[in-house]
Amino acid sequence: MSQSITLLEYNRRIKNLMYDPDVQNCWVTAETSDLRVSRGHCYLELIQKDEGGATVAKLGAVIWANTFARLDAYFFQVTGKHLASAMKVMVNVNANFHEQFGLKAVINGINPEFTLGDMARIRLEIIARLTKEGIIDMNKQLSWPLAPQRIAVISARGAAGYGDFLNQLHNNAYGLKFYTCLFESVMQGVNTVPGVIAALERIAAVEEMFDCVVIIRGGGSTSDLNSFDNYDLGANIAQFPLPIITGIGHDRDVTIPDMVSKLHVKTPTAAAEFLVQCGLAQLNRLNEMATMVVTTSREAIAHAREQLSYYGNYIPLSAQKLVDTSRAKLLGYAQSIPLVLKSRIDSEKTHLDRLIDTAKMATAGSMERERMRLTALADKVQLLSPQNILNRGYSLTTLNGHVVTSSTAVHRGDLLVTSVKDGTIESIVE
Image (cartoon, rainbow, N blue to C red; front, side):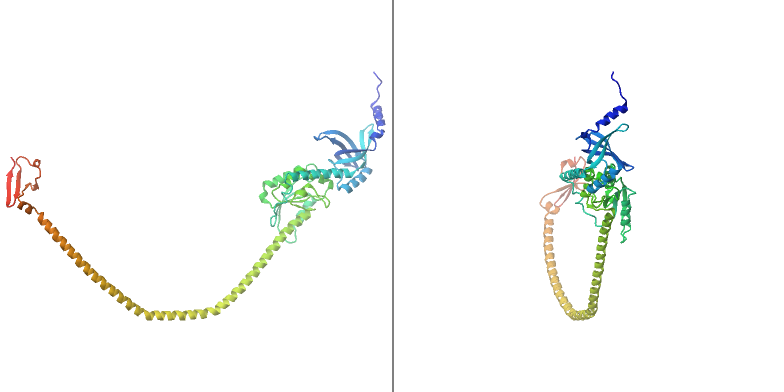
């Protein structure tokens, strides 16, 4: 067995290897993770992921306080963001191995243009995907209500921007009334996207209760805006059924939600001011309409008064003329009635005389026809009388007053009476 050495000696040997130029003053591209600042020092991990998102390399790193203040300020000046987790970076590192604390990369420099390009690439990829799917302008195409007053707000409850928004909205100088409902969400960090999407889903469940949605985030670090550049969040906002106002950044920051929302404003106060101006525009329009109604009413009243004055002068003269005309007509009717009545009576009398003559002639004709018909009937009765039949040699046999027409109608011992021309003969049936 070879001779052993202590762990400390082994670590010293490793440390001696760190002086190799290949691991000192190297520019390395990686993604930041678990970044935290303590006592001015920045501790983080540098990681590398494969195309599937699996971590294939990891190395602990540190930026000492005196270097971190300078690098972070420079990074912010170029990118508008502070160093944070989940950023693609290009950093200048020295390998450092401590016998007690192990291997760590000490970061001495940073290339912010690399990070800026990666953030721009990610944003452009998201925009291209939303555009390809045809949803990027869907929320922008929604119409604003004439006076949006029922506002769903997505924000952190204690955020200064939320307080500024409420103060500007509810204490407006015009006395306009607004009704707000907070749908609370985390507005920074890894929980931002699921928090805002969950809030949107809660609003969508009762969308008929609101006119629009306001997503606001006031104050805080600019680096916290990284989480808003997310496809899922952008797609939810773009397809939301109510118009959305976003006020989540600073003057120089435009996020994916800002690009797909109906309206993008810089601050929560600006969002409130927009809503106030919408209400004020409708209030002014109502005032204009009220003024127009009053003016029109006054003109109509003045015109009506002129007409009444005209009619007040015209009606008495017109009425007198109408009375005179009617009186003349009545007088003419009074004079013509006796003549018309006498003519009508004479005409009706002549008509009545004609009807009487016609009735007399019709009656005489009818009586003559009836007399002739009675005479004919009398002759016929005379011809058909039983006596005339007997006179012609016929006889008539009766039994108990009934005419015998069949031999089966009589029986032995019946008394029959036979009538002939000059009398009757009685016989008994044997």
